Amino acid sequence: MSRDALRAMKRTLRIGRRSQAGDLRHAPAVEAALSLLERSVRMRHRRLAVQRLNEAVAIGARVPDAHWQYCRETAAASRNSELQQLFMQCARGYNAYE
Image (cartoon, rainbow, N blue to C red; front, side):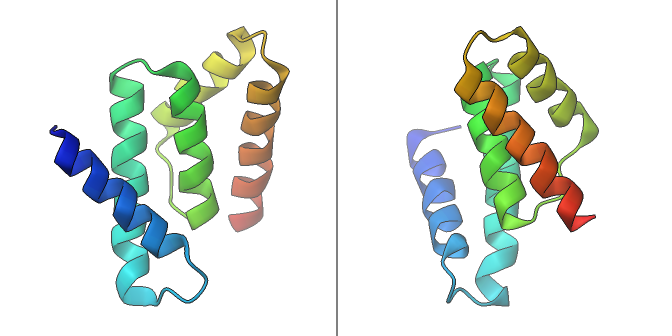
């Protein structure tokens, strides 16, 4: 994936997160959040994957179980309490949507 494609996905996500963004911008933002998360998991960017999980959950995306598992294992193995707390925040936020 090119840098330009990554930048475009990040831009789409930022636009979709805005409170005034309508439905037409929300669906592409959800797709961008999931694509960025998928890439982080595939590239084994552990910390970034948990951050991307947070973005996906915050925008209301249905996150695949495999991504949850990867981020759960990452947070559990980390000595960074902020990363662990971020994962727990994601889990609580996701459960609120379901």
